[in-house]
Amino acid sequence: MNKTLSTLLGVVGVLVVTLMVLVGGDSKAADIVFTGRGIVKSGGASNSINVYWTVVPDAVERIRGVRSDVNTSNAKKYKWEVAGGSLIKRRTTSQATPGKEVVIKGTLRSDDRVTGVWVVQNYRQFKLEGKIQGRTLDTGKTDEGWLTVNVTSSKLNNLTATTKFKESTVKGKDLRIKVNGQTSITALGKSKNFDEVTAGQQNVTIEGEVIDEDSWVASKVNERS
Image (cartoon, rainbow, N blue to C red; front, side, top):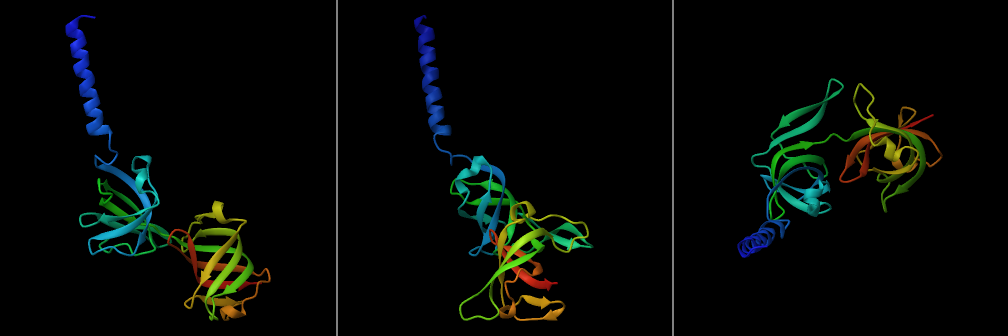
């Protein structure tokens, strides 16, 4: 190898190392556009929401399982709603509220803040059937607590076409469902109190919504024969 070629290769080697230090040495050096899913938490401002990230691509792995602020001042906002028995994605000006699940397209900055391009609030209202396995009252309460139900089916509520909802995850398993003071409870068409519900393998239909990461909250409980 002649001296000139050796010198050129040496210069190229120095440039490559320098480029690696400047570009590849820090995973936070560049902005990254991505689409991810998470849960809205309290703490957002008028033009931002605070999100706990549950599903993100590998390129932004560092924010999975943590909370970060999402600037929504210029983001398009949507929410899934039921209209005429079908799910419709509608434009909205309102921020997604704490406890709701959202899908977001945005840009992750080096300080782990996200600038949103669009935000879609998911629909997680359910209707499930199963058998009551247990009932637990909150301390000092007669109308709040938990029902344990062995699930036989689970679908999205209020839709004309049957659409399964997390059924592969909960079917055949015992699921804890939150009951609060606003939950309507009936047995064979008659109203009853939560402390009157017994764990006697009754067939039950429960309507409600999944809040936060995986909290099933009942709005209606109907014991069937």
